[in-house]
Image 1 (tube, rainbow, N blue to C red):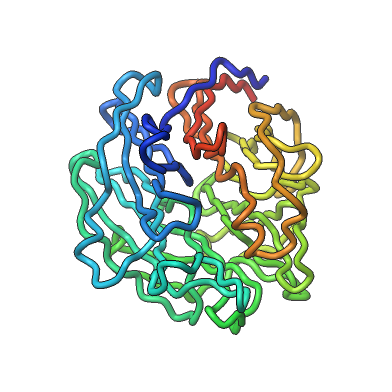
Image 2 (tube, rainbow, N blue to C red):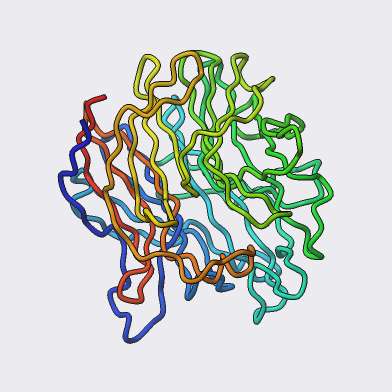
Length: 368
């Protein structure tokens, strides 16, 4: 059973008539103290050069939130950048936040380059906190072996073996090319984020015709890792149904990607015990909104047991066939689920409402 208890706003611009300040791309973490933190990008607009990661906190289970401030001071960098990071709590109580940033050499150009269909240059970054997210190190660059920027848009996970894993897709080069092809890349750190290896490919279709955007992963039983992806065919400029891939050896080898039959875009996956997964999806087609699903994943087969629409937003404007147009027309996305206690969860996502980019949350009771 999926029960929607209440819906509230985590962040909204308190003075929209004075400043343009929108919230996008949230990710929540529950700390050992019971406090919650939410990392999100705040920016003047969806592709604004000033976009950077901010933190807001809650000491009452998400009922009220207090804005803490920027995760770090971007003035230490030699060029304007736009960044977005998500955090994960490690078993030792520390926090690791990872993501990516784009270099904004031309402040009048968007992240998606209209002339080429490519994406601004950038890098994958990681930072650490040992005081519950109040202070963070200046983000360090994660070296990569791929020419493209890797879209590490979701939080890392700490596996039972202690490795940190993240999943990402190579974005297009600024000139619009995609030399690595339409694949998904696994990032692995054996030492809590100080060194990295990105040579494992977790997603590649037989035809090489799908890019796994905004992928999310979770570990079920030890070594059994599931990735859920927004599937997009760059060449055909078409969305596919959400795809899953599975590993049974801690992410070293992967199954062939398989369609789920769910026509969502940005999505996330959470382990709920046994062979049960909880998934949350942004649907931007005819059945638009944020959907939560209870999934039976026994024998690595994706079977929906229950689904519920928890938020009904505005549809994407126009057909948005290209990445450039899609960036310009998105109105909500990046949903995720955080377990609080027992069967209580918080779902969060961003949404444009009344012309403002807000971070929204929905309190749920889920009894698989």
